[in-house]
Image (tube, rainbow, N blue to C red; front, side, top):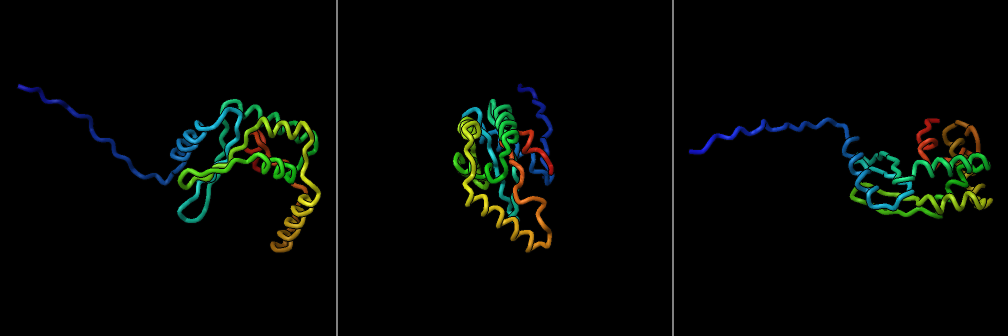
Length: 160
């Protein structure tokens, strides 16, 4: 004679509309495929055409990113310099609807410590775009040289 086995009650999963837990798991899985000291800019494409951005760092990345940012800000680097340096080292890939921009931070640090800067023609191009945006919106830009955007969590998490 066999004994009856009591099965646990089924777990009901209900949609919540909160994609953050899934995005966090996907981000962690993606980060596992990169070397230490890497900054990842993940763009989660949405079905409605929008996008959400999540920043992730591999081991040692937050500390090195903040160190880079401290050196860059102290040296007077701005957003145009950030764009130039980021473009030099950006590795782009995708995983499903997620676009991945990876920045190995050691080469970024080398650029900042050796005073790599954006060329003047690129700097003027950024100013031209900002002036045009101001004209289109009727709002003058606060500055034509926005601040360094950041590779570490201290600057990338700022809300200004």
